[in-house]
Image (tube, rainbow, N blue to C red; front, side, top):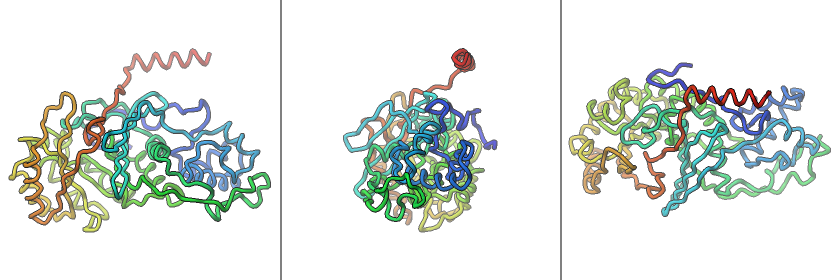
Length: 416
């Protein structure tokens, strides 16, 4: 479908698959896995059973090798290996901050690069996931916004970030789930496929769609990925532990609430048209009033599931007492169940802004708290490895038409 708003034409979910002609099962729904198994030659009943088993191994156990799927017949595992793969993004670079924050530079099958970040805390571990290579919104305070939009990430590439993070954190369960052992009618399955399951403590407890890109400009792929992440038979992450952040793609917000149902965060960052037009150019298309009305109408928003307004603190730009009072007024005018997340600006090379002073940030926060609205100040994490909010950027570039033609000619020549 055509997404409303300013957006460059992009390719969605059609990048070359890893493994040559083999099909990557990551990102496919359970029914879609069954469908490709049928296309490969299994009858419908067998495909349904195998799809259930494979789903369990991919999303509950983190397995990438069909030979490790002990409840599938030994004779079938090579058949699966010849036709399918369970992919992961390629890690180009992995960095660890002095505060424990981890950042990965990842490469897709077509070589395009994107980043993800894991932020550990005492009571949670949050994975910041990207939805696009680059971004089309050009928010002036954001390093990603200095990139061109290259393309959307497919559902498999989005889910793959979660799988890779769990790989790196070493938190996949060991053994086999009790009651989910070998098929009793499968004489070739391993005898020890049941009865010895241990679940490690989960470090990755929360997901935020706040990495590179605007999630609502890649709605279908983000929706498909998050439904897999929330599936109770796999990664089983509650929708209450997932937050989708948007800069204000108003026409898609209600659909996000109805069809995905996760928590909503809005990159507000200013309370006047003049300033928000400057730092969040999407405001020129969907203004503050229209955006706040969409927030008021967001399905499922209530005092137990408040909307989060992200507000980056920029020196002498959006950080005055009057700005704080206007923010309070707007929240109350639209009767929004909301909290404000104040973000000290994280610098990057060539940034046109400076961070507000700690004293100014505290004063701004205090005014909002006194009005009865929560306004905590986010502690910057991962600044030393450029992993903090607004600092993500890769070297990916959108290929020119000449470059695309050259690649196509090389592929054709290779095929003879």
